[in-house]
Length: 228
Image (cartoon, rainbow, N blue to C red):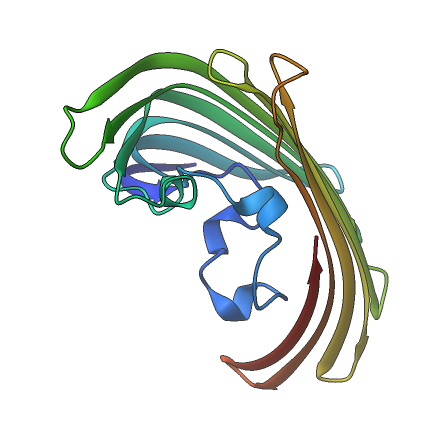
């Protein structure tokens, strides 16, 4: 058992907690279709258990907290006139469950929260957007037999009280050649607005990554993305 209090990454996706640790991930840049969100941390508590059930290694984790990002860089993607946006996820509650049996690892996670915004436009009074329900769930699978590696991950987000639904997924396949890893991947994001006649976001990215583990703690990577 492990109990923690403080500031942590939201353990929503398989690489969330190490997404800023270069040696822990194969990419130069994570697939933004899955990992690009306005809130990625929380301040709160969590209770984690690791153990085995027969031949299966199991991890379970439950957490709760909140987070506020002042002048959100994520929201700056949508405002180009100097407008600043403060984003908040309150009443965050979530869990993750992971099971590994030999070369196969399965993972699922979910969270719910209430999101709100304060939009500060130069020369105008602040605009407060009231809190709205937010729910996200993910599922992931990976298989690493010998020198090969295969993985897939998907996310479903319900933000209909704000704008609609988020649907994203990513698949990867690669092979190791000694200290080298050659990885191919494709990721997709699609927004489904509440009103189907409204504009909706959508993008996809194909990537080729070459990673060289030059020494313990020292990694070189080359990544080419085709982003559409």
